[in-house]
Length: 252
Image (cartoon, rainbow, N blue to C red; front, side, top):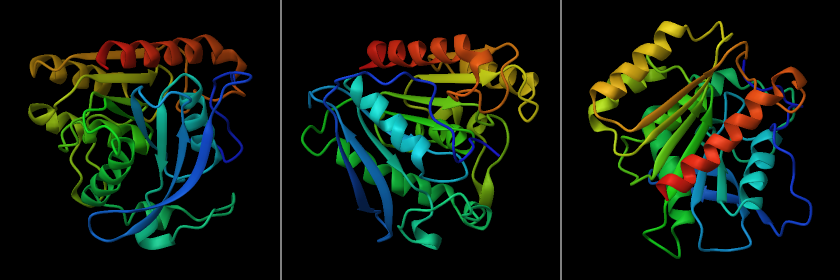
């Protein structure tokens, strides 16, 4: 499991920020319609961000995260994975997401991400666009770095870097030779689901492949630590948010 249904991103809202938000229905290249959420920054000239959720798909945590990005001048589109199997409606805490997670494919997620990238580049084909993902979305964010989107960077929170995904999806570490952009990894040192050895292997593989990367492990932080309710991990959360902003600035 990743973020609780009631969780919120560990970022303080900016009072008075001008942000425009919209629920979207996007169409992937295979004709699938799927839900997304767009938060527009006050200035339309900054970078863009595609947000890849955890196993719950699109819910409030990721809509709030999109708004936090827009508040700092980054247009953001958060996508849902389950248009092919669960439709486009809003879902409550009782949504049984696992059957839909197990039906996802790497190709489908690439197609959905491409549709979100197209939204962000609708008025500027050269716009710097990044991806960020959490858990299931962390791994998938890193996979988008080799998917031909022309990304400026790919950010992953507590993704599984060396484990193969569902339905034949490769491990991110197996795609190093095809990665086209810098990588940022934000990991929990107390995350029992992702061994330190796997993180070290990912870092080493990226280095051997000549990929610009920053892999950070927060000692004592669990899986899903980027949660406003985790007061004991506030320093890790603040540092992670600052590193994301620095990463965007350095690669835009």
